[in-house]
Amino acid sequence: MKFAWIDVRAVPPQQLESIVDAAIHARVQGVVSGDKDLLESLPPTVAGITTTVVIEEGQLHSLGEDAVGWVDVRDDPTLRLACAAAVTLSRTVVRFADPTKIPLEIVLAAADRSPGQLVTVCEDLDEAAIVLDVLERGSDGVLLAPSTADEVFALARLLEAASPTLRLTTLTVDRTEHHGLGDRVCVDTCTHFAEDEGILVGSYSTGFILCCSETHPLPYMPTRPFRVNAGALHSYVFGPQNRTNYLSELRSGSTTLAVNAEGRTRRVVVGRAKIESRPLLTITARSDDGIVVSLTVQDDWHVRVLGPGAKVLNVTELRSGDELLGYLATDQRHVGFPIGEFCKEN
Image (cartoon, helix red, strand yellow):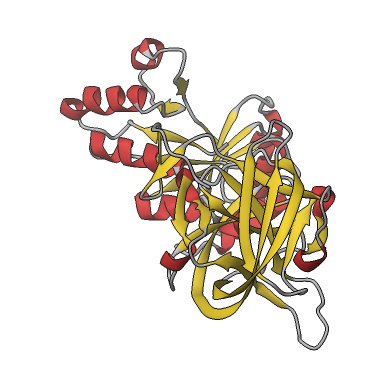
């Protein structure tokens, strides 16, 4: 779970109260300050943090595992120190002099299997958005020195947009039905899908099937590891911030969610959405508690969905009783947003 700290050490006194109040109401995880009285006044939901400046490796080894380390990365020795701190300490704050994200990538790679949390100092909200996604993993947390309370709330909204892990469910196929021509959408993204990844698509806003990317070999054509042959253009696609779009709405520059067989998600950018007329096939499946999920796709062997264990299933070979991976959403939708109203979809 991504988190944010705010640094109030340089905040003017006349703005301090409003910014700290915003941090409390926005559920920011931590406040960095040298004012002991301020830190003690914070509620239990917000951690009070004083930083420890780590300058030399000798100091690093003298710190306890629970200490918060701070490393200013200016050159190769301090970069190596940041890597060591990220591996050793439970929490490490890193500030980079280099405006590129290459040093951050190096620290993230070094600490990839470490249990500690890495917090990256950001100059503004735009940089925070980038830092949270570097190397697809991103920094665990960001530290921002806000100038206004509005920036604190904007930072909180940015974290809410971070990609969550979804609880996928097993669906059992009831039947498939062949149709005539209709328009289907191939979603071509600006990313390389893994073999167990795809996107969640469904005819109903309350249920989605995990459509497989074209990362697996096909006869007569090369793989298209950036593509998902997703479904008919009326279909919903599940995207960031618990939002849906119609497949017909996707276009170059749109964002959607790549989802793997364990429910892990990441935001991906759409390069183009390709609509073509093809024969169509409707898959109808049910969850264990009887929720019906429907998906209409191109009626072709090379169109695939994923089953439990990331099993690749060709849609034209699906039979009653086959198991698929899907996602159930409890809310109905209005212009893509979840809404608690009555709506029946057939």
